[in-house]
Image (cartoon, rainbow, N blue to C red; front, side):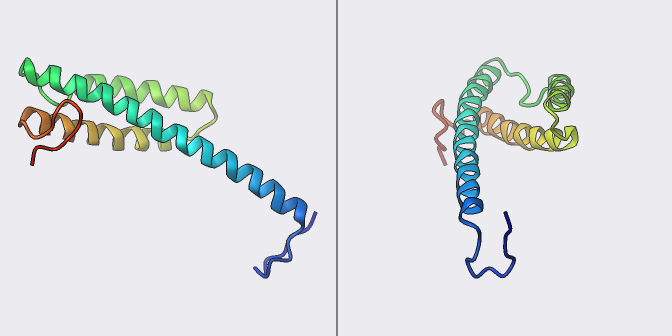
Length: 116
């Protein structure tokens, strides 16, 4: 199979079909990732409300360090760059902490709706 870099559409139909199949898989995986993140944030918002009710700090550096180490190990076993996995988790953790701070300040309801 050969492909063209001209962008004129003269790509082998078998290549187009394979691209379409792979892209459909990517789209399905992306949808699953979004739904899993939504479920994760539902849980972390419950944690935020529990922390706020008991005057616990929004961040838990020890837990975060354990989670990062755990995710790096999972990434290695899945043949995913552990540094990428750590960056991804750090991004999520930062958002979770931001939510927990808003919950503690009374600015985020149990269902994740902003009061401001």
